[in-house]
Image (cartoon, rainbow, N blue to C red; front, side, top):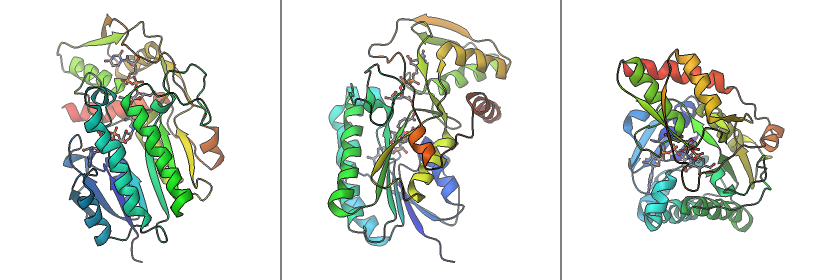
Amino acid sequence: MRRKTVLVTGGAGFIGGHLVERLLQNYRVVVLDNLSTGKMTNLPDHPHLDFIFGDVSQEADILTIFENYQFSYVYHLAAVASVAASIEEPLVTHQTNMDGTIHILNAAKEQASTLQKFVFASSAAVYGSEPTLPKHETSAIAPITPYGIDKYAAESYVLAYSRLFGLKSSAARFFNVYGPRQNPQSPYSGVLSILTDCINRKIMGNEASFQLYGDGSQVRDFVYVEDIVAGLILLAESEESQAEVFNIASGERHSLLEVIAMYELIAGEKLSLTQREERAGDIHQSYADITKIEKIGYRTSHTLKMGLRKYHEYSSKAYV
Ligand code: NAD
Ligand code: UD1
């Protein structure tokens, strides 16, 4: 049978690479990426994968792709994913995160009659630091950064295009995603990629100290990247997800100190911690209610302990 074709923007990134790997089991996949943070090494060499170097903020790049392919699904993940970068360069970020989304939506709506779903990668950042917990999809929206503001505007556009033009769509608000191939290089990288890097450097006999911002009592909902991928595919394939927004998280909550202790036990390595001032704007507690996505069939397959074990196993091999 002929494979359906799927577009993944940002497919060469951390989450995108995992999604593409999974989609290639059933689909022909087209990746659009400008490799600003993504890497070709995040993508497998596969006969059903087409990589297109292009920029979502350039209308011409998008139009060419939609002229050349008829898509069954679009997963729009391309974004400046760093909150810090969005604060330093709000306009540049906006061109990708907002304008880029509108370009993709405009092209996708021309295929609305055959497109089965447009899935958008939004973020828990839309909730900001408003303190009511856990975060439900109906919780107050109070983004505190250009990144969060653009994510909320973009997800609103996606749902508006469903109402206005009949584009079938869903938006997913990811909480703290972690797993293999997450890049630890910036101080604003996901904390678990930084912890993983510190642990592996120590295992290799190098000096490594983890900078703990605040007292470690901050609470997060860490979700393993494969669970994000499963959630995204569920949203694409479910009819009940139409024109709705969903949290994707683990539903578990842990303080940073608990996570560090768990990781040390798994890796058999004690970390040296250097305590620093709490980061400006750091959210003290962030965790999700995932009842809405569970009602349409989502189940987390990784507890934090399982996810950390898998991540450690993968990354300790990658360091050798
Ligand atoms: P990532 O930086 O690894 O992936 C983003 C990808 O988009 C990269 O491959 C990058 O090269 C590409 N890209 C950036 N600008 C582009 C442009 N103008 N045109 C084409 N491609 C472009 O980040 P990630 O963690 O894999 O994030 C994927 C998506 O998930 C993003 O939309 C991000 O905002 C969202 N998200 C991530 C997290 C997380 O914890 N990692 C949490 C919430 C939401
Ligand atoms: C994460 C997302 C962000 C989103 C927010 C919404 C990442 C990288 N960022 O931010 O896009 O807006 O959720 O809830 O996933 N920390 C340390 N030492 C370090 C690094 C971090 O102590 O070296 C602390 C941070 O101060 C923070 C916690 O660890 O309290 C988690 O940090 P981080 O992984 O950067 O994610 P969030 O700040 O939760």
